[in-house]
Amino acid sequence: MDWPIQDIARMTGTTSRTLRHYDDVGLLAPSRTGSNGYRFYDQSALLRLQRILLLRGLGIGLNDIAGVLNHELEPERALQVHLRWLQDEQERLGVQIASVRATLAKLEKGEQLMAEEMFNGFDHTEHREEVEQRWGKDEYAAGDKWWRSKTPAQQRGYQRQHEDIAADYGRAKAAGAEAGSEEAQAIARRHFDWLQHGTQARSTPVTAEYFSALARMYPADPRFAAQYGGTDGATFVRDVMTIYAQREL
Amino acid sequence: MDWPIQDIARMTGTTSRTLRHYDDVGLLAPSRTGSNGYRFYDQSALLRLQRILLLRGLGIGLNDIAGVLNHELEPERALQVHLRWLQDEQERLGVQIASVRATLAKLEKGEQLMAEEMFNGFDHTEHREEVEQRWGKDEYAAGDKWWRSKTPAQQRGYQRQHEDIAADYGRAKAAGAEAGSEEAQAIARRHFDWLQHGTQARSTPVTAEYFSALARMYPADPRFAAQYGGTDGATFVRDVMTIYAQREL
DNA sequence: TGTACAGATTGACGCAACGTCAATGTCAAG
DNA sequence: CTTGACATTGACGTTGCGTCAATCTGTACA
Image 1: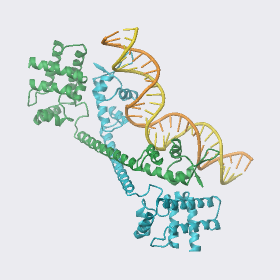
Image 2 (image 1 turned 30 degrees about the vertical axis):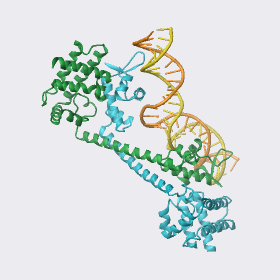
Image 3 (image 1 turned 180 degrees about the vertical axis):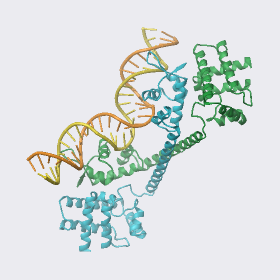
Image 4 (image 1 turned 45 degrees about the vertical axis):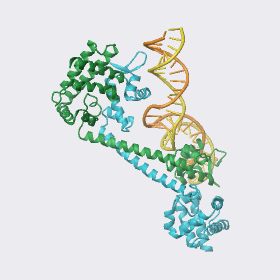
């Protein structure tokens, strides 16, 4: 006694396409094939299908299901491994949910788009904690207030200046300039001026110490390194800045 | 000033393959292409890439990222929609985790494989609540105890008898037998005997009422229907059993 | 018996986001 | 000139089917 594919599909709540797929991948063959190629399934095939669907309902992959049904893989093993998977996944999602929520909260408070405002020398959103820890809370608050007092156009202008500076560093390095060369030091001066310009309204002036500390951050932090052409570029910038601080400040 | 693809990859922690992919799908084109076909990226491309990676890190799809970057989709919208997604997914995983844990617990208690033990007329694991509600808790406990007292071989033998009965029902129906026919009624008798055999040790005997109630369940519940050849088959079985109960019990 | 119409078959593409060869061209260094 | 590192463009693999498309089969009705 057997039934055509559609009946089996309806009986088990799947589709004929799924059954054909299971046949293709060798997971469940029909118990009989008519001379016209039609598939028919009997009780035992139905039973096997029910086991498949049970495992599938638990989220097990077809491959592992095949292993279990062929007695090559113990159900307990498969389930335990899968359970770990699920738990890890759920945790990952939890972290992502937190991140998305945090990002949404920022957006609601109107905190400038997303990545442009990062990596400007001072940071106004993402690494707030880091910046506060490094240079003090008041410092951050002052800088942030100053930043917010600018129009978007001014902010972009300020950013672009920094981009130019970074690009010039890159060019100098590509041209084989020494860190202590006139050319490189000229860029460092502009870099320094740019920082000062943005720090006029702030509590702490840009000292030699400040400048050196900033320089040392560059190669260490990939986020800053990216802004200066990778670790190599950042290292070059660090050297240039360090020399500038020693000589001029 | 720009950098070759490998530098950009290292700077941002991705791979060149990913960058080429983003180029292919129109998400991020290189700012310049050498005469040899090599890709080069400048500051603004790098910035765009950083935004892409930020969004990607939050789990947004490349398609939506493109929408956001092209100002066709508001970041807030995208994030909110995505947040729902994540939450739903996490909940789904939670349910699955519970299911897998329950299944594992069953396996540890040695409760017979998985699907074979279901749909035998009485159910010993999956639909315990349902069975208890239908026939009482004591009834279930007695049946369960009886079932457990059997050896696996005996259990399989008992199951196989039922499979034969189900198959015979199917054959009779396929042969066009009437529900009241001698042939069909003979199967119902065996079905009844089979039930009684398994109920000897139980508190409630298999009455006409019990038999009829069981019969009525068949077409209504797809899990039972599956066992008897779909809804049509189950309906046929129900009719045969009902007539048997009226005439003989 | 002709004609629908439902249901079956075998391809084969699509999806998401790249990983991973494969075959081959380029460029700086020894 | 050779070597080695890095680039390019295909194109398949992954996961589990959904979804056409083109074509038969089989049953039912006029």
